[in-house]
Image 1: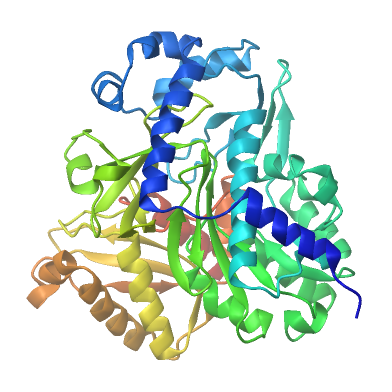
Image 2: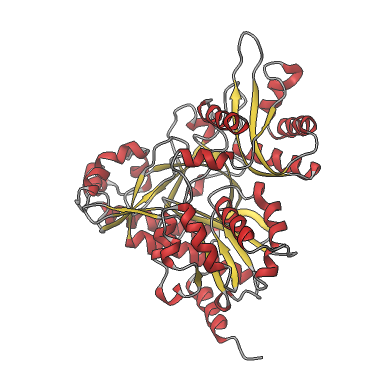
Length: 507
């Protein structure tokens, strides 16, 4: 057997250039340096002058004088960048706008992306993920096989020359040329914006390749696999791709899809590896191949702050730096980045699982929770309850959303779960009962409201025909890319639209 020098050199390169070693001491030091660097870099921009960065001498100054921000704060600045102005939010040239999904708010956002943040945050984070998997699995041979990559698309180039695209497509464009040949499909198909055309062309290419790794959002990888199975029937993926080693996933919680992927891959001990790469930055990677905890990347050109969710919900915006966080407290995460997002609420809620190194779980969204009856229902509560129920009753969920049915004069309120099943339970009433019990175990406030049907009756499961969520996303022009189905919606609009699509399908 010839010596595999390419993978040997690649492994050594990853170990030396991207050591995923983030002790608490190193992480806090990283964060202090990064904040100082970002403030110095942005002080000459219009945003930096408006926020008086030249007067900020310490984190205490920063926390006291700079406001916590959301997207609306930047809209005027972004319009100036769209018109061609530079040095508005960042001192580097804005080459791209990363377009967010906007499925929760219904409004897509444009996040300025520079070559600097792309290389020193997004691409750097990718290499940290590769380094971690190589560190934990010595059999990795990523340069011996193709990497299936299904990113979002490129949508438009403005008159100012700024290109609008999904962040995953921008990352694809920034993969170093030396590694381009290891990816499939080709870069043109990867960055198609028309999702159905992308799938068709991707399947033609990937079915003929020796694929060793997969990367992409679970829902859209499944769409590609479904199409591939129609065109080129197979029992399990490892029959087609005998060297399949690892799936890098992110964008949505993987737990509702894990069983489907395990059955699809058909290989014991297969590596599923989560990355936390959002439009605004690459924040974390899976701690190791056996743990679902995420390791915070503290040396990735992002400065982090945290507001306890309980305080945030009351309007309190007093944040903590990394050295001040505690375990088992849900925090709203803020980021400060070199593209000009300052103390920015990205919308995720995290709960730390360890403080050396800093590891956490994503436990919800600031806009993706339900508190219609005082139950404070978090995404993690619902995901855990679904996972337990599905395991007990041997069924699988493809997609779902949850909304409250409000209390009225005629009846008490309840939670409604609109679910597409990949493998449907034999008895929906039994499924509803067990899911409700598991949800009560996960959330004491929900249990309190359910006691003796005090305020809530048992939850309701609405079984949806296959393809319902696909039709809903299509109606919103949200197919592919970074787009995903909101899981918890604190209102009725979305679920009523879903029910209308269900009714139409049954006519």
